[in-house]
Image (cartoon, rainbow, N blue to C red):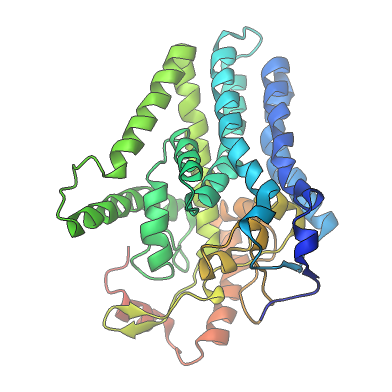
Length: 383
């Protein structure tokens, strides 16, 4: 089933040296402080390194078609788990120390400050939200709290409810706001998903409470925790940096959310699950997510690009996510750093991706010959 060019045995997987490449996110932290201390062109370092350097490294080091032993015990993954937990307090310290320092740094002009916090948002989105995604899927309460902390720092706490209760259940169907529709450009997708994901997250939690005969305003609704944590972040940003600090906090938060939704856009673009009738859809399979096994960007993104396996087996921790052959899951031509840049140019995106979507349709659903009619029939009121 898996694309096993080489299977990583358990004895090798559990070595700390095997986990070491996934710690490279720590290398991004000094670039934030270099920009803050020196200003000038150095404020561009974070986005340049995150996007262009990792794209270049992917081109040099290529793809990784190996799969780890999928049933590795929790205790054997200690060094993989550690980085995701360490990142939350590290990001907190980085973000709020910069909010304290930058507004009083006379050597930085307004543009340099904004660009610097745009770069901070690139890593709180690329790394922070990605790590929160890994943590929110775990049963350990401490890890789930770390996920909530990371999401509160970018003011997108409802992502946890939307992702766990809506996206995984309805991915590839009209009920999932995050599944980008065929021919839907990112600039139409983005405002739509900002609104609909918040609405669907709140509705899902409200429905969960209703099953227990509780009103939406019961304090067990996690939205109260979300709002409380987000308010604390705003108060802390204002306390440390005044109005300037608050504005810079919002710049990084907005950038982080934009980064997240760019990734959401490319992960399922144009892919659908077959409607079985009666409001039911086929089970989620690896074919319903775009797969990418580009080596270096997967180190940075802790295997998020092995998204086909994540949706197929959501309880797997990132070190043991599997990659798939072309016949088992659709493949992105490049890693996420390149693909997110392509997504910002809709004509270029359609030129790259639409032929791949059409090939995917022919491969998996050859019986559907008129996709326009099929889409209207299964989604009479598309968003």
